[in-house]
Image 1 (spheres, rainbow, N blue to C red):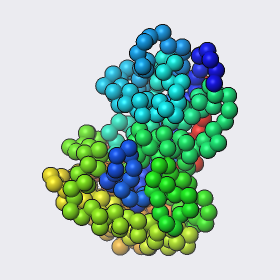
Image 2 (tube, rainbow, N blue to C red; image 1 turned 45 degrees about the vertical axis):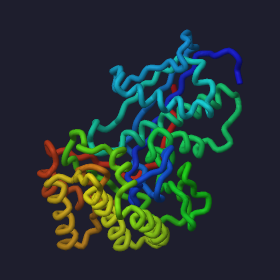
Image 3 (tube, rainbow, N blue to C red; image 1 turned 120 degrees about the vertical axis):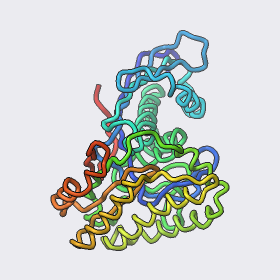
Length: 350
């Protein structure tokens, strides 16, 4: 490692993701209680630039965080905790003043996991800087980035890859791990490789209960162990569905997983509900439209009120007409975001 720090800069953009098999419940150090599977998005992403300059203070860490051009002091305790947790992996962090600039391509509180895209982009930046400072490549660059991202935000472990990603140990997936995610590379049916995702913005405000609080409530949820086993079983079944293109089975699994996630919230102690009346209106409208047309439009939900409507690229025109004519009235200010399964992070040339 270089003995004298020098000015360095690196920038990455990394996507958010939407889980099909949900991660809900965790052990210390962001270890998942059940395996999960997600699609990385293409357009909803975070761009992060990290600038390092030699430190001139006795503080353990010297850093500042800027979000969309504004200093965000309120977020900095989370960054400091993250730096402490990864310091043993990147011991050079204490030698520099770290200037972080980050921007999302999607609006804040839009029901898209900015922690997943943000922490994965930051982890990728730190891995690139480590290679520069140590002057040798990381043997498993994206695996290391996934492991580091997980420490900052569990779902961020999945965002360092494009396509379909699994996080959590599963007997049917070689190389799967509790500590990092991996991309499913082989035998994915073409229909899933171009899957569309329109995010219907039912509620853009802050959630009444944070995801971290929801995860913690799984420790005392009486149905937790059954749920964790169910998720693992469903993921195993989904592996063959992803190969054979059985959309009917995929829809059933995806929608059931979304409703199970929210059912776990409603049977927690204390119980809570993140869906809004318009969330239910959208779900019922999707079911009715699918019944009327036999088009493969379906939904999933994150830990919030907003709805991700998924559909194959082949029916994009019909799906968008349905959204404009029947679903947009349930969205706050009529707003929705069009996205699709994506190719994963990219380093930005400076």
